[in-house]
Each structure stands twice: as C-alpha cells, then as structure tokens.
Image 1 (cartoon, rainbow, N blue to C red):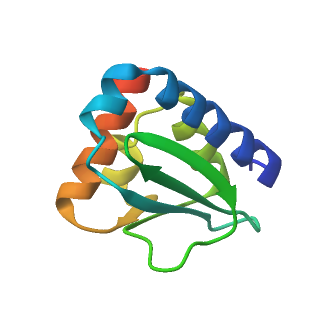
Image 2 (image 1 turned 135 degrees about the vertical axis):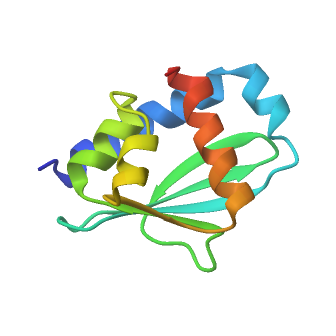
Length: 117
C-alpha cells in the first residue's frame, strides 16, 4: 500500500515530466481537461488540470472533472511514477477511468509518451 504522500510525489513526477516534454505540450495545447485521481484504499484525492498544454497539480477534488482515475494506492503510485503502464490494471479491472473513450485514450497516450512502454 502506498501512502498519500507517495501518491502525491508520483503525481508531481508525472507533472514535471509532462511539462518538460515540449512535444506533448504542443500536441495537447487545445485539450483542456480536469482529471481527478482517487485512491480506493487510502484517503488520497488529487486533481490534474491541463490548460493550454500545461499540467498543474493540486490536492483535493475539482468540480465537474472530465476524467476520474480510480485505483488502489500502490497501482496509482506505480502508474504515475512510470513503473507500470495503465493498460494492465485497466484490463484486469483494478484501474477504473471514468470519462469519454477519446479522453481515456488520450490519457493513455500521454502516459506512453512520458514513460514509454
């Protein structure tokens, strides 16, 4: 089990790596989205906000998210640290992503662009 602090740190690493990737920022400059990340086994809730190609992170839940990413703390930390891809947990049901199919695919693509396979 990961702690709230470990999830926060993994999301910071993800945010920093995303924002250092100029190609991703250009590709997503018109994809403005709010993504809530929620752990199921610890009290941990974060919001990633993508505006004009730049991602920011804050603790807590935003109103009206476009995507909600839900999983156990360890899976979330592993995904956002880049230790695992979201595909396996998504396919076996331990990772749930609520949102449009297009947004889910875009989020998966962003993860692959940052961490590779």
